[in-house]
Length: 110
Image (cartoon, rainbow, N blue to C red; front, side, top):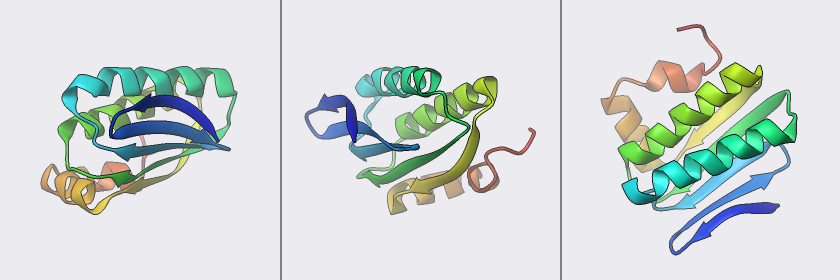
C-alpha cells in the first residue's frame, strides 16, 4: 500500500492495481485527490485498474468529479477499469444523477 494523499478525514492510497479513497471528499480537496490519482495512473504503467470509493463517508458531487477525472485519465492512457466500488451514499447520488450505467460499464464508448 502506498499513501498518495493524507489529510484530516481523507486518504488516498494505491494498492496493487487499485486506487482507494477513504473519508470525506469535500470540494476543497477534490482537485488535489483527482490530481494525485491521475499522477499515479500515469506513472504506474497499468493495463487495468479498480477504483474503490466504498470508504467515502458522504455523498458528494466532488467525489463523483474525482471519479470522472480518473476515468478520463484511464481512457487517455488506454487503461481498462475493472471495477468501481461506491459507498452506499455515493451509490444513491450516482443513481439520482442517472450515472448507474456509466459506473457499471466504465469502459463503454459514450
